[in-house]
Image 1 (cartoon, helix red, strand yellow):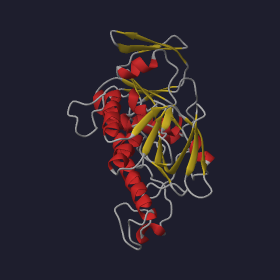
Image 2 (cartoon, rainbow, N blue to C red):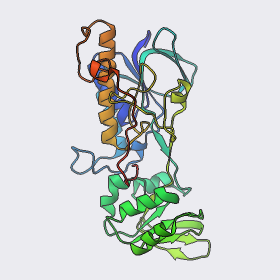
Image 3 (cartoon, rainbow, N blue to C red):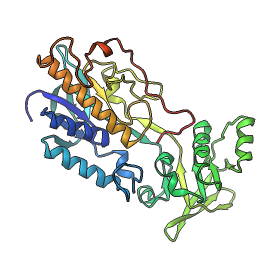
Image 4 (cartoon, one colour):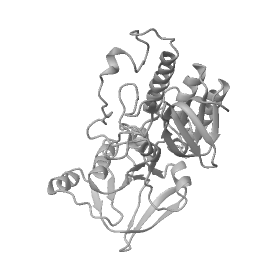
Length: 337
């Protein structure tokens, strides 16, 4: 692909691919550069993604979305963007890992986050079989009345274990040797709900018959569970956003307005990199808004939208011109997915 792109999309998860589908159907020149590290690929079966009665595997969903985007002319390449900078006149210049140069009128960042996973053997396989889970919003329904342990520490871990308490009463909080540093009130709450807190180090995890059966503590005590949940947090993939000076929260997640604009003109964002709830449906909704806003931005540039005329998701309308950037906040007491 030569010449200046209408839009460069960085990231090929549900957000990035949804944006590509929209922009390709808007007849825009669009390139998706994807490192193939989407969190969606780790999902064994998503049961709350609308339209799939029996659920869908994360890799299968990504394959379907890639095929759909390419069907309409979007180009998708495996690789990474090493650097991104704003051009003086307008637009962006990017450099790929192989040294290739790209220029684009607009950019959509859909780089997502990385889960801080527990250091356990055969982790991907264990996640695929539902032995280790990371998203109670997505799949706590599948652990109703099961014996569950949550790995984590601090208030976030406590929030997750309390969320899962709505599905099962047999819960243990494993800190892997890290002190919880909870208040007396917090500890009393956990005790009242029958949630055990184990702050001892875990020596190893053994499996039998296709399920995690034992967590062996340093003392030699053995604990049996059906499922482990990891609540160790996430790391935002915000390097490119930092390079162009986009505004972020203290977790490195991008702050966007109602049109999914970042604080940098021409740069939009969608998905888990945006401050808010980490869910496929949220990423896809943000991507639809961002792609439509990109299209209308380019239409206005080309004189295809008369001055002072509104357009769907148009970031230049009077209604939005004075809108201040605001983070999409997560519902109170609800863990991130």
